[in-house]
Length: 86
Image 1 (tube, rainbow, N blue to C red):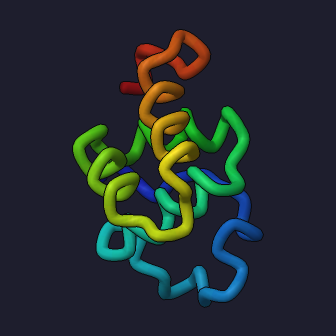
Image 2 (image 1 turned 135 degrees about the vertical axis):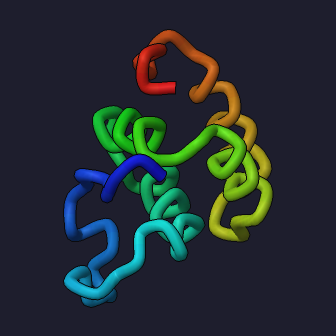
Image 3 (image 1 turned 90 degrees about the horizontal axis):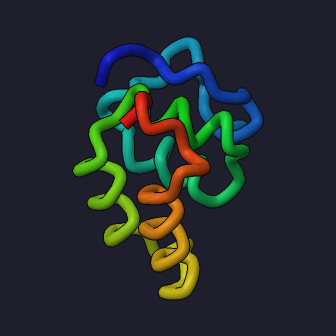
């Protein structure tokens, strides 16, 4: 992880963000961005986390249906996401 992601606090509303460990809890952060994040949040996710961790989280999460997981994988490969963030 390069640095703390600059994402809206509401994505992690139930956590104390002053003590939240963004590296240790990367699956929670990535999952929330996949579920509720904007394109800017997706770009921030790619800036802060390696694609391997993102794909690992896509497989791990129970919050996304197969169709949503397929979309997330496809979206990560699209030109909509900044290629320099990856």
